[in-house]
Amino acid sequence: MTPVLEVEDLTVSYGAVRALDGAALTVARGETVGVVGESGSGKSTLGSAVGGLLPRSARIDGGTVRIDGADVHRLRPKELRTVRRERLGFVFQEPIGSLDPTMRVGKQMALVLGSRDGVLEHLARVRLTDPERVARSYPHQLSGGMAQRVAIAMAMASSPDILVADEPTAALDSQVREDVLNVIFTLAAEAGTTILWLSHDLPAVAKRCSHVVVMYGGRVVESGAAAPVLAQPRHPYTAALVRAVPAAASDGQRLEPIPGQPPVLTGASAGCAFSPRCLQALETCGTHRPPLVSVDERDVLCHLAGAGR
Ligand SMILES: Nc1ncnc2c1ncn2[C@@H]1O[C@H](COP(=O)(O)OP(=O)(O)OP(=O)(O)O)[C@@H](O)[C@H]1O
Image (cartoon, rainbow, N blue to C red; front, top):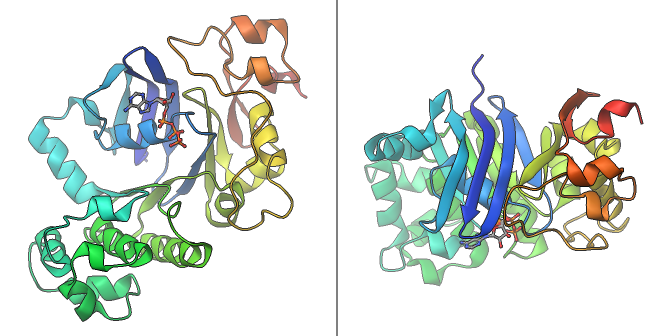
C-alpha cells in the first residue's frame, strides 16, 4: 500500500543555514507519529515542507515529499491548494495566529466548511462548551485553549489524511494541554487521520503515539514503533534524549538539555552530526555519513547500529 507520507533525502536551507540535511521518513495511513528532537533539529521545517508551506526564505536543495504518491513540490499551485484544503490539516503553536482577528469565529468556520451548516457541530466536536457563544466571538475574545480548539476544528473539518500539529500545546497551561491533545487524538482516530506531531515532550509522545521519529541536525536519526524505540533506543542521540527526561517529568515538562550544543549546519554534514557530542563516537563517525540500518523494528542512522551493540 502506498504510504500516506514519504519524505526522501529532503534538503532545505535558509540562506547559509541548512535546516534539513537529507531527511527521510515513511508514514503509513493512520499512524500517530511524534517527531522529537532539540530546538533547531529541523522539526518545523519538515512539518512545513510536508504541506508545501515553507517560507519564501527557504530553498529546497533536493529530495522529495510525497503525499499518497504525489510529489508535493512538483504540484501546480492550484493542485497544491487542493491537496492542502482536502488532504492536510495544520495546527500551530499560536492558535490566534491561525485565525483571522477581524472575523467572528462562526463566519471563519463557515468559510472553511463552505456553508453555515455544521458550524456549531464542528465547534461542539472539539468540546467547546458553548459553541454558540464561541461562534459569535472574535478570536481575541477567546482563551488560548479555546482558540486552539477552534483551530483544531478548522484543521479537522475536512477529515484530512494528515494532520501536522507543530507544538500545538506549547503555549497552553498543563491541564488545558491534556484536554487539547485528547481532542486532537480522538478526532484523528475517528477520521482515520494520520498525525505528525512535532513535540519537545518525549513522555507525552511515548504515551500517545504509535510511532516516533527522532531528528538531529536536519536528519531523521531513528524512527519506528514508539514503544521499542523509546524503551531501547539504538541511536546514541535517542538514548541521550530518553536519559535527559527527568524521572519526575512523566507529565508535560520540557526536556533537560544534553551536554554540548546541537549544530547549526552551513552545508552537508561531513559525518554524523551528533558525533561531537556522542560518547561512543568512532573516528569514522566524524568523517563519513552514517548508513541507514534497519534493526530491531526501527531504522537507525548510525555507524554503530549494525555492529550488534
Ligand atoms: N525562517 C528561517 N530563517 C532562517 N533560519 C531558519 C528559519 N527557520 C528555521 N531556521 C533554522 O533552521 C534550523 C532548523 O529549524 P527548525 O525551526 O526547523 O527546527 P525545530 O526543530 O523545529 O526547532 P524548534 O523546536 O525550536 O521549533 C535551525 O538552525 C533554525 O535556526
